Image (tube, rainbow, N blue to C red):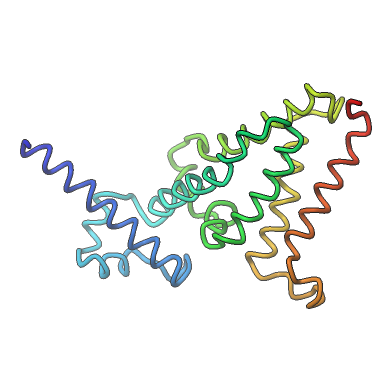
Length: 210
């Protein structure tokens, strides 16, 4: 291995280590208490070293949010074999809620926290991860329309509406805003609400094929 190749490998290993520690701190302490200084202390390097790999804290959290989307895609990947697009759409709704409840910190970072998007805006790039996830949803809705569902509706607007409804449920749950609901209904609240959204979708396509 050449010296240049060795240095590049060491650089990549340190970057990976920074992200691993940042992720652990984020899960342990949350976004606000995870600082460059604290990450540097954990990896036993100076903060200056971290700035050689990342522009700032937002840049680190953008990289972590990319990891979250990789994990989300694992939840969706198993649904590719669902041939009926409407059944797949319902399954996507359930999988999205499952992901949010089982990975609350990641969900908060991916869809609620502003930090990752600050890094994105600064570089004037497109939100590639979000575009892929939304594209998969829109593609499923278009397939539904090809089967006769949701006639006359704009697929992009319908997809955004579906996402917004499910996201609202997940955001309220993740951010602990469900205490206003009775204890009895708090049990499996997100899944119950998700089931209602599915029922609403079923009623939206009264002209479904016979």
